Image (cartoon, rainbow, N blue to C red):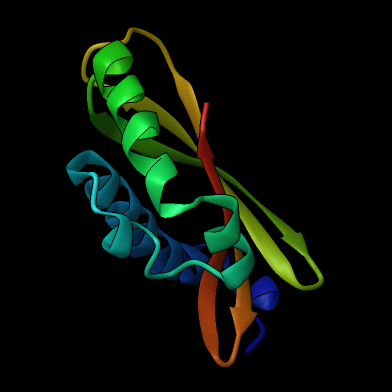
Length: 116
């Protein structure tokens, strides 16, 4: 079944482990693991040498990723955008974690991801 036609629970069953890996790999500054579920377009947008300074900056300013809470899923014909309320270990307040998943070759891949 097409991802955009699935229930929130079905989409989150796919999205949560992908986002868990992204955050764990980002904390470890592990480019290969961080980008393992990326589309080619997403990989081109994040060159290998760009990950370290991004991670070092957020870790210095905000700490590490804390708990996140599901907010919403936006469905498009060829993708889904998942939004979570995200916390950090050192920064007060709520942040937004977002991820866009697309289906390619029978796999769900990350076409965009950001925490702001």
